[in-house]
Amino acid sequence: MPSSSPAALQAAPTVSVVICTLNEHEAIGPVLRELAAHLQHVDYEAIVVDDSDDERTAQAVTAYAADNPAVRLVRRRGGRGLAAAAIAGWDSARGRCLAIMDGDGQHDPALIARMLRRMRDSEAEVVVASRYLDASGSGLCRHRHALSRVGVRLSQALLGLGVADPMSGCFLMRRSWYRQVRPQLSGVGFKILVDVLASARRRPYTVQVPTQLRRRRGGASKLDTRVVAELAALLLEKRTRGWLPARMSLFFAVGLSGMGVHLLLLGALLMLGMTFWLAQLLAICTAMGWNFQCNNLLTFRDRRLSGMRLLHGMAMFYAACLGGAILSELIGSGLHALRLPWWLAGAAGALAAGGWNYHAAKRSAWRPEDAAAGVAPSRDTVAASPLAMKE
Image 1 (tube, rainbow, N blue to C red):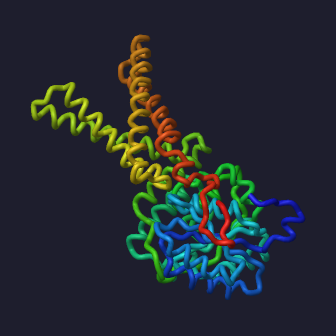
Image 2: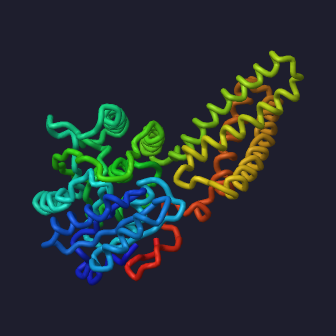
Image 3: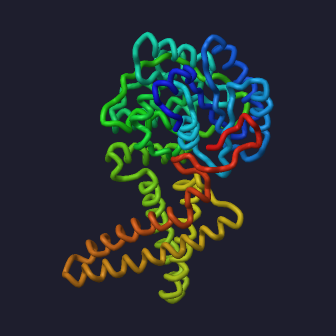
């Protein structure tokens, strides 16, 4: 993170605006031009954090930045997830205030200037652009509106967040608040505002400004059922003050689904007359493959493996699960020998194996340094531009 000494802060821009992009080459140019027009009297910098599959978005940003030194580009190769991208951008930012907005044109860049004025007038620590402050509507389609409202209700019920739209993707905070919450940020999923609001022992002084989403100029919606699952896991992490990490919740949920796959296949093969040992072996291998694919698509989707790394990761995952199976057998058998009920001994062994599998898989199959998408800034190369910087 850039220096926060008095001299450095005095030379720092008023605000650093982080714009996270995923295949939004059509929209990012107009967004940057609008932002410059609305902040023409503000000392600002714009940091575009790009997770795109190809070079077009990075090329559009680099072309614009050639004549606009306030714009910088951060490339995350293999990275996924708005939360991790936002943290990478804020960690490299120099501004006294830190903001975030989407790069698809749905957020009006004029909001940044409005939020700056509200922060100055109110001494707020966080200013949120809320879609639910008035009756004008959120600007979301019916399906996305329903998913968003589910997330809002969950956040307010579990964490007591006193904002109308904790799912907002456009907000502003003081650097002092970011320094306070940075060590506790999860960086999982797409709902970074919940992470920012709920990662300290106290809630920040927050004010809100009304907004409505505009029509998207490029890219595609990131809001789907996986985002809701990630949000639920994040809420559990914050509710338990970090004792149950979001990734572990997702990993255990996938494990439960794998148990269902195992039992269904085992029963079907036994009904077909297969011997138990062979049916059990096939069911175990199938469930492990199911768990690996689901974890790759959900639990570790911001570190998603592909190509040869997918095969290597699968081999490492199978090895981790083998170690977990041995640990489960030792603990379960030992506790049963001590005359504990069979179900309690079995459950203890399964929980121990789950914890082992999670930590072993995280450090072997989905290593942050391989996937370039951990919470902490990675050391990936960045687009070859004098205006680009390393993450």
